[in-house]
Length: 77
Image 1 (tube, rainbow, N blue to C red):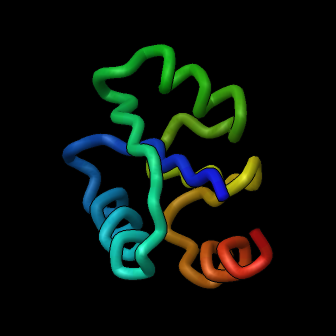
Image 2 (tube, rainbow, N blue to C red; image 1 turned 90 degrees about the vertical axis):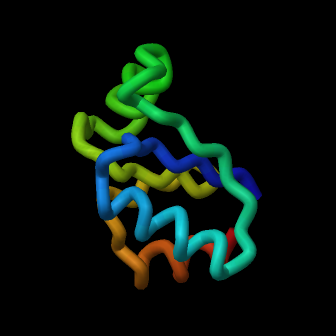
Protein backbone atom coordinates (compact mmCIF):
# COMPACT_ATOMS: atom_id res chain seq x y z
CA UNK A 1 0.00 0.00 0.00
CA UNK A 2 1.31 3.44 -0.92
CA UNK A 3 0.05 6.41 1.10
CA UNK A 4 1.14 10.02 0.58
CA UNK A 5 -0.07 12.97 2.65
CA UNK A 6 0.24 16.41 1.08
CA UNK A 7 0.33 18.92 3.91
CA UNK A 8 1.74 22.12 5.36
CA UNK A 9 3.27 22.58 8.82
CA UNK A 10 0.62 25.12 9.90
CA UNK A 11 -2.48 23.16 8.83
CA UNK A 12 -4.34 21.67 11.84
CA UNK A 13 -6.30 19.19 9.69
CA UNK A 14 -3.02 17.97 8.19
CA UNK A 15 -1.79 17.15 11.69
CA UNK A 16 -5.05 15.32 12.43
CA UNK A 17 -4.72 13.21 9.25
CA UNK A 18 -1.10 12.30 10.04
CA UNK A 19 -1.89 11.56 13.70
CA UNK A 20 -4.77 9.32 12.62
CA UNK A 21 -2.61 7.39 10.14
CA UNK A 22 0.08 6.95 12.79
CA UNK A 23 -2.59 5.71 15.23
CA UNK A 24 -3.70 3.18 12.58
CA UNK A 25 -0.03 2.21 12.12
CA UNK A 26 -0.10 3.18 8.44
CA UNK A 27 3.24 4.13 6.94
CA UNK A 28 3.04 7.22 4.75
CA UNK A 29 5.16 9.74 2.92
CA UNK A 30 4.62 13.33 4.05
CA UNK A 31 5.03 15.99 1.36
CA UNK A 32 5.26 19.53 2.73
CA UNK A 33 3.75 21.49 -0.15
CA UNK A 34 4.76 24.79 1.46
CA UNK A 35 8.44 23.90 0.92
CA UNK A 36 8.23 21.44 -2.00
CA UNK A 37 7.03 23.18 -5.16
CA UNK A 38 7.18 20.01 -7.26
CA UNK A 39 5.21 18.19 -4.56
CA UNK A 40 2.59 20.95 -4.60
CA UNK A 41 2.30 20.76 -8.38
CA UNK A 42 1.98 16.96 -8.17
CA UNK A 43 -0.81 17.30 -5.57
CA UNK A 44 -2.73 19.77 -7.76
CA UNK A 45 -2.27 17.58 -10.86
CA UNK A 46 -3.50 14.45 -9.06
CA UNK A 47 -6.37 15.97 -7.08
CA UNK A 48 -7.34 19.24 -8.76
CA UNK A 49 -7.06 20.80 -5.29
CA UNK A 50 -4.71 23.48 -4.03
CA UNK A 51 -5.81 23.19 -0.40
CA UNK A 52 -4.47 20.69 2.11
CA UNK A 53 -4.62 18.06 3.38
CA UNK A 54 -4.82 15.74 0.41
CA UNK A 55 -4.22 12.05 1.01
CA UNK A 56 -3.28 9.71 -1.84
CA UNK A 57 -4.03 6.07 -0.98
CA UNK A 58 -2.91 3.87 -3.86
CA UNK A 59 -3.96 6.54 -6.37
CA UNK A 60 -7.29 7.33 -4.68
CA UNK A 61 -7.54 10.93 -3.52
CA UNK A 62 -9.04 11.97 -0.19
CA UNK A 63 -9.60 15.70 0.21
CA UNK A 64 -9.45 16.90 3.80
CA UNK A 65 -9.72 14.64 6.85
CA UNK A 66 -12.49 12.34 5.62
CA UNK A 67 -12.04 9.54 8.15
CA UNK A 68 -14.74 7.19 6.74
CA UNK A 69 -13.24 7.42 3.23
CA UNK A 70 -9.70 6.94 4.57
CA UNK A 71 -10.83 3.85 6.51
CA UNK A 72 -12.64 2.42 3.47
CA UNK A 73 -9.62 2.92 1.19
CA UNK A 74 -7.24 1.45 3.76
CA UNK A 75 -9.44 -1.64 4.09
CA UNK A 76 -9.64 -2.20 0.33
CA UNK A 77 -5.98 -1.48 -0.41
